[in-house]
Length: 432
Image 1 (tube, rainbow, N blue to C red):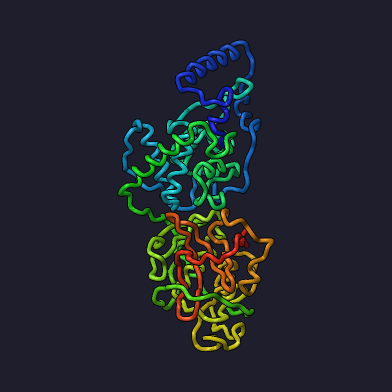
Image 2 (image 1 turned 180 degrees about the vertical axis):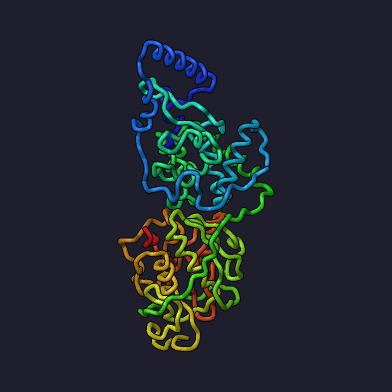
C-alpha cells in the first residue's frame, strides 16, 4: 500500500528534501559499514511493507500496469510554477487518468495525491520510520514494495496506473473506491493511500489542493475529450418478459423518442454515456468510472434502451422490454403493440443485467431498508425512490445530480437532471 509521507515523517512531519538527502547519505554510510563488518542487512527494507498498517479493501480490477481502459493520453498543456520534472510528472498522471476515462475528477485526485506525497517529484527514497530505518515507499505516490516492482513504482505512468486501478498485491485503486467522484478530493486520496491524516486534516492540505486544482485546470485547458482505447461496443439485447406489478410517477420533460437499440461503449468499470438526443447535453459522451464492472454493465444495459417508449408495466424482474400486459393489466398504454419499460421495470433491468439479484417488482418494493445507503454516499447505479416512482442515480456533474429513468407515457427513456425533491433520505444499493 502507499502510506503518506506526511504521516510517516519524523515526529509526524514532512521531512524537507535537503534534510532527506543528508539523512540518505548518512544511512548509506552506515549500511556500507555494516556490510564491511559482515552484518546482513538484505531483506530489512523488503520487509518494511509488512510492518506498516495494511489496506486492501478489494482486489484490483486488473494487474498493475494493465489499465481496464486504453493507453495513456498525450497531455501537452503546461502549468506555471512547476519545475520541468514536476510538469512532466503531472502530465503523465493526467494522461493515465484521461486514458482510463476518469476525466477531470480523476486528474485532480491523482495530481493532488502526488503533490501531497512528494511535491510531484519522483522520489527514489522512502521515509524514516519510528525504528530509524527507511521504508520501501518510492515514486510519485510513495507506493510500498507490495504494490509492484520498483521499476514500475518509479515509472510515473505505471505508478499512476497502479494508483487508479490497484496494486499487484490486491491493493484497491481509486476506481475501486465507491463514489469517489462525489467525494472531497482529499477523502478520495485518503481512501487509496491510507495515511495517518484523514483527507483534508493533513498539514498544508488546503495549499496542496489549491496547487493541484490550478495544475489540473491548466493541463485540461484545451485538452480534447479522450476516448477510451480498445473498447468493446456492447449492444445489450432485450430478455424475455417476466411480469410483476409496477407503477411510475408524473411526467418530466424529455427528448423525442428514438427507435432501436443504442450502442454503448463499455470498458470494465468504465461506461460511456451515449451521445444521444435522449441524454442531457452536459452528460453526452461522459465516461463514468463506476469502480465495478457489474455496475458499468448494468448502466450500459440501461443506456442501450435510451429512447424506447414508456410502457405501463413494461419489463419486470429484470426482464427486457415488453408490452406490459401481464403487469399493467390493460391500464394506460399496456397490452398494446408498443414495447418498452415503466420506471421499476427499467431499474430492475439495470440491476439484473449487471449480474445482481432482482430488486423487486415495483418502486415500493425496491426501497428495501436493508439496501439503504445515506444520500450523501450515493454512487452511480444506486436507486432513487420517490412516491410512486424510481430512477437510477448517475452521479453529480458540476453540482447537478443526474438520473436515468422511464418517466411516463409519451416520454421516452432518458437521462435528465434530478429536479424532484420528494425523494427519501436514502438511496438503495443492490450491486454491492
